[in-house]
Length: 295
Image (cartoon, rainbow, N blue to C red):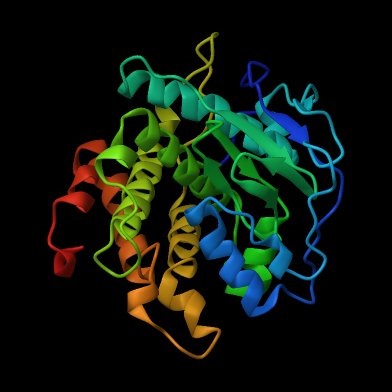
């Protein structure tokens, strides 16, 4: 996956908030951090107090303004290729183009790049909690240093396309929110057949469908935003889906409990990403209609 250097991403509305409050480095976040990463966004509560060094940074915005600063330096595909914050900003532009084409009356979410930590309507956003979508404020929060944690803690290569998969997954939750999927299939607890797992697998499928089509999206001058992904890049994205499976994460604690699953197994996440990539959006709704043993 490579952005076209000449592509115009200056139309992004991505903002940066927070000022260096949480950095879970090489020492790792440990089991409690993994629990916070999994459960916090799902439950809509702040669990970063479980993570050593976790803090809100005080006032809303984690020490920054409530709105945050615009990423004015992110103007071209060249910027997206060279800077991870600009890569997220470029992803926002392409995601919005894709969903405008596929959802009538589409309303875009906000994307916030978290620098350390910042307050949200769903608790504190930080790299220890991981990327998440907050329905009350219709915003995707992501600290790009989380990609380093994926490499250190979960064994993911977390390359450029894997990063876009993660952003696309969180965008999928916004689509579920504005289409009423979250109301239609409310949280009914945990387990392999839970709505939580089905919701996450559908978001994986949405991300795969977007990646399958993203090379078709062009800027206002007809310049393609992103080149088609290579096989190696696709394998990297599939690897990211695999490493964030419930079973893979729980194995690090030495005990796998399917009844506590909230996101699906590694094999399920890999399958639904690939299914969306190969077959498009039409197959994604099946995550809510298939029997549990066929997910």
